[in-house]
Length: 57
Length: 376
Image 1 (cartoon, one colour):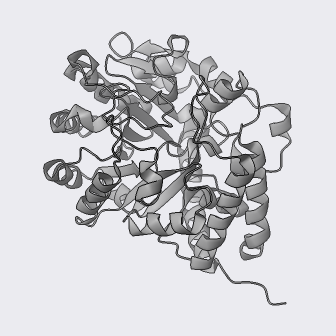
Image 2 (image 1 turned 45 degrees about the vertical axis):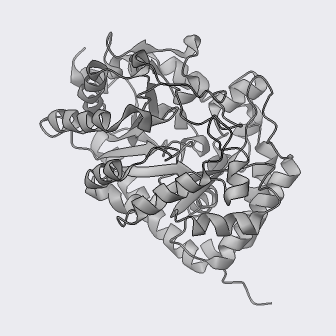
């Protein structure tokens, strides 16, 4: 049976995001010399589709 | 202790610090039937509004954290504070961040609002100043208005939709929190369709949590909730549209390829990146603890935010406690043991398992089985 490709576009986008995020974390750690705690956004809000504006702010 | 010494207090640094600002405390103009703050809806009094002195103190102290910073306006309903409050906040930020020599992080302003008070004028101001908006919408009118109502019992759905359109007309994205309740738990297809049609551009589904009085009756069974999540995930996967992200699912997919989840409740030690400040300057580790005196960790008019944060590390450590079951769980990196506050209020202890553990385990396995091959 052929392997389903459903979700391929979503998976590709997420892989790109994670690669970029991990590179950013490594940079923080190399600058500060400390391991970085990741908290993310507040659970009681959703800004996950608004990242396009982050660099503008 | 000077600034350099203070940086050395912790062996870890933070990727981002979020200051949750409650400019009118827990006051709200609507009375949701499932509100975890007890559905308080009353006229905002003068003493409930954040003073300029407190607001300015926050903006002076925040750059000392030397990480990316989010100012997240929350409540209650933060728009009750009025445009002038937000204008002053931006002015103070310009004074303290742009002229500060020590700060080189990114600053975002985020508002979590029910949007029933969003005017054309306020909308223009937020757009012009690059605010990020997040709202709450539970689906179509019947589903949403079953719980999200004004004090007189009338629904808020139409007003929220009008505000979303107002914001989207300016080409801006908007996220939404959507609760899974008895009203939508059997309508996975319809709920997802209505959320997309509402104009929101991303969402996160929340479990409807019980309050300490046990008075919330909108909570579906765990079996119903799990089935809802599985059905929505399957539809989302079928759609395969990365421009409509759903955070619950992205969190799991991110961990399948070596990433971290996107929110505090899904990250181990997630609580460390937050401080909540109320109208009178009182500080709590998170907005969920506001008005609980045993979690009041200081006041910005008495100590700086960084001093309060540093001396409260044991509080954060306690909140992030993991039970033995969790330490050995294969899903820990995707789950993070959920919200500390909900563990405390449901189980009586931080060092306990997430009340939604069984639902999450079922969902994580379902997702992994469906998509693991895409991440090989």
